Image 1: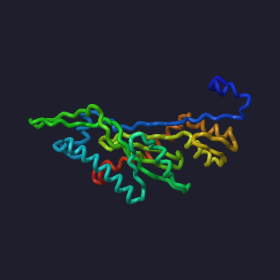
Image 2: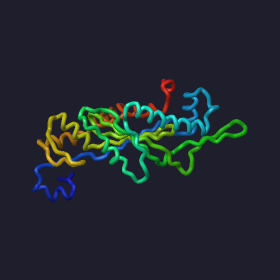
Image 3: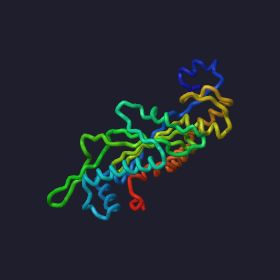
Image 4: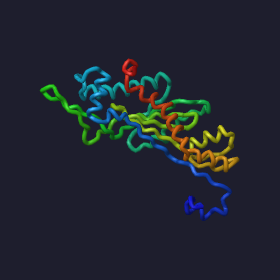
Length: 243
């Protein structure tokens, strides 16, 4: 009883059962080496074999190529790319495109939105030297929200900044995870939004929900990230550069 909130404790006598689900899980992904000026210089050198072409123009070209590759790939695979306007709810837009085929797995739509991000600026000097620093204030640049249906996590969203070093954010829904696990356990239930309104075995559903609070959940998080993050990051580099 000590772990229950005040509302639940007050109504315990009229409750048949209860479950506690982790709601939103947000993981931030950074390429640590390229997040410092020196590290970014080294990354660029490893990629190109020289620092001579490290300048604002080529950094903008990388962002432009990211956009063209995403849109070209999406067109080839009939995946909609929607440019989101300010104030629009990206997740609500994406929900309109969720596949009706229960067997579908993969990216089903990409939402593009302009958001502030730390972007590198290269200052070149007449002497031939240069200095790297963050642009201030942070500029608004395109972020690409890849909406994915995963076998174990349901609707997953991975947001990638289109500018190097392509920082990422992985957004997961604990209720979606529990629903997927419950289906595999052959539980029948009714789910409205993020709420389970009916379930054939509430105690088993609670056990499934509790699995997100165990050490093994770290492994599940790592697996879903590794399944999809590289399919989104691959647009940042050409095939030759990836090799």
